[in-house]
Image (cartoon, rainbow, N blue to C red):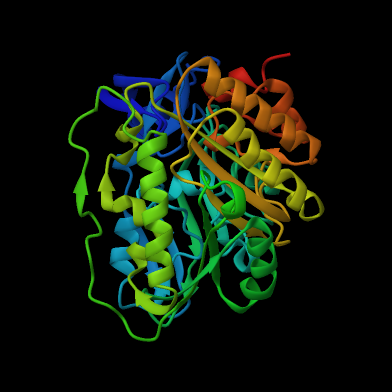
Length: 437
């Protein structure tokens, strides 16, 4: 069958790409007629780069494997198929007193994608990654085997699959521990700050007192306003709000040019910063508003223009953050590049069971840039150099261009995943980084 296949960054897109269902792929496995690099599991295409794409093989479209198998409302233990969309699960959990333990910035990811990328959220400082809450899963391998994996059964494959970007096999079901909450709604506290030092001081004194913490940075601000932004702190509220779809409007077609240019973003950032000052204090907001604000705009990635966008997410150790993060922002100014989404968060010291998990103790900076060709790539390479100087890492499932050397410097144990990778499965990312010498 042919299905739309694209990463969210849309730098490399396959439209109506030939794909197979997981059932067809597993039948292929049982027939023992697979070849190297023949497949790659594909969730909902929310990875920004090429970790979810393969040019050499067939995509396994996991979205049809989307049943919630069981939920124990007493213990919060959930077993589901990997194609379940996070937002659909949240809707089903409403009123049960349970919520996903970790959510990313979009509700349109699959549970299998959350596992494969070991996603993190605004509560990493307390809850760690998605992988910290995975109890077990079933993995189909190309040798025809079905393997149950947990921290006590096939622990090597358990660790390699969490954050393994789908390279170890096809997950057919997974069991996770949900988080007990008083309500899905969030009591949000907004605190403006005037500089990066203001952010660093504020995060140290506030994050431990709140379950969720994230900062928006005005990347374009210079002079006395350099590094200004808004700290958003949150905790699940006791009073539930009416359910909301969260989708307010969308971008119905691809604009011929990048709409998010320097001028429009300066106006937006000023307005957003001003609105944040007006809303400073505490208010109760919906889960969609707090966790997934950009999901309210369908296909917002089209605003970057037909050439797509690059996202750069890095993590900088605590001791180097006050030096490296300002240098990264200054590098974007020197390159005259504007980032629409600039986010700072603090990662805690909760260690993931995943072999290639991205989060580690430090501060993580996320930047989005429209694809302007070589000038954008030059900036991204400069940002990589600064990250390396700080002894840090770049996020692979947000990446579409990092070098093999950068990847291997970020993840010293990548060879352990290569050893456990299913030989029938490979991605463009893995070919470009791990398999390039």
